Length: 365
Image 1 (cartoon, one colour):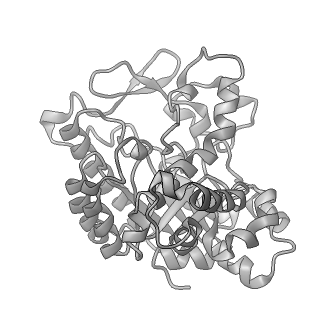
Image 2 (tube, rainbow, N blue to C red; image 1 turned 90 degrees about the horizontal axis):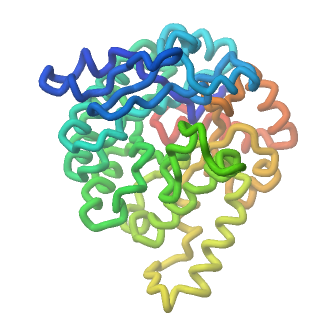
């Protein structure tokens, strides 16, 4: 059976921005620097951020991840090299793979951020071109600027990209405000799904993974709750009217898992029914109607989710591997698929493993 991995990642090579942005921006554009024993990204002259092993974890044991900070050279080349990545897909039995990247979306200066996001999208288009039938690239939208975002996503088709990623800090912007409607309308018009990845929830504390001193238990609690924080963003997009106003728009919740979604659908309808009058909720249908109509969610290992997938809808679920991050199923993906889908009817299995992703990203089913 064919498998599309609906959520994987690529790590940016050291020279990505230094070779692609105009010369006047290069001093402030992201560059990799030696931090003494490990490497890090330096941006806008700020103190560099170290490369963390959790994002470069493929072919490393859980014990090795305790190293935390690593060298760029320590990663498997499949993390950033498209040719090496194909070998990993073949080894893991994956037919095609959706690609997420950071895209320099954490740059503060708006002008520099826009320039660097465009440079990343150009790089991604070249990565995808190495195997366009197997790589599904998600371009980064410069979400700090709704108008620029609308213009940039109109380039995506020409670049060979098949979806939009609003960036890990996307929910930090008022994406339900009226000025963002031009962005959502452009995404719907282009037929490009918009992805919100974990790390894009409004209450995320994204710097915790980089810190070495945190309150006891805080890091593990953060990692445990991270998948579910995207629920806040989805709730805003429903109650804020984005999904009702743009019925052709499709959203993807990436790496959030699905075990919590059955309860979430019940809870969000309960909130609407009980609180709608004093909260001024202006929806023609219950919130779950819009989520089932327009939202898809990915999961890796989630046996609880597979027991309740019928309450969510097989048509709203896609399988993923999270390659090369620390939650990845590589190189045991086919074994995990067999375990998770052992009692799932063939039609639902096909939908979640291949057909839903093929449909939303415009591939042949």
